[in-house]
Length: 267
Image (cartoon, rainbow, N blue to C red; front, side, top):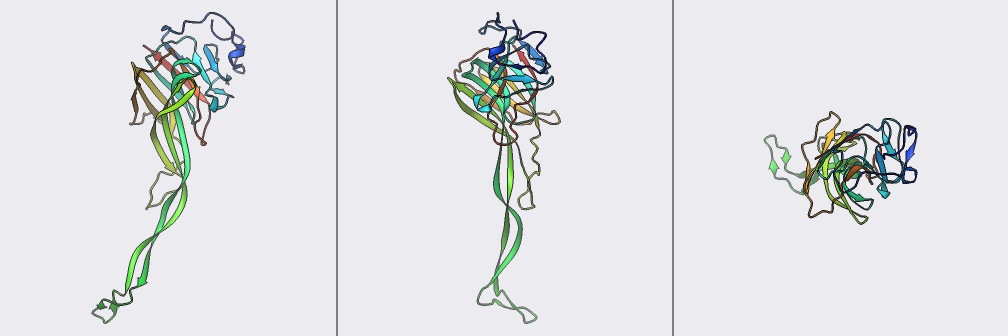
């Protein structure tokens, strides 16, 4: 039985306490290996942990990212999947190989911001040598000063935008790897050039698994995929069959649980 009923509208919230109890597909076998959802309602979704809701177009959770809230599909059970997700912030991602709330893998977005020093300009700094090398053709002394180039420094904010691969084993969450997709600043100069923007320019992620091989890449605002990818081979991982949405600590910049849509194809 799926969650809810025809009365589960877009203003309802979903958690373990308000699921209608009933028969659900076995968790150790493949089942309906294709799913695509824009989250108009949530009656096909199982809140493994946390409280989730939809406004009819976007899902979110009121549960803190530090609790790693998870929402999985009732209908899709597959270990080899290709999943795409649309998002606009740090923290959300695709959870996969889920066994229970404490044992899972996930591909998520992660952003950082911090201060850095940069060169804003230059100047010539000259000091007397105490002697001169000689005189020029007009009789003027030359070589009387030692000159070098000096630099002016300022402070700017650096924004880094990553996709990352996480693994949870018995509730202990580990970062497997980070992939930097985009790096920007709030200021630039000819001496320290940078792309001036606070925009992440990431509107989605794609995850695929084949056997123990995991591939993750990010999608930009033009719906093109970045050239760099995460390609990781897990060593004898414990695998479940569930997959879906997770919200993780995405840093102190642009963290939000909002997810616009998801597509998961199992094989």
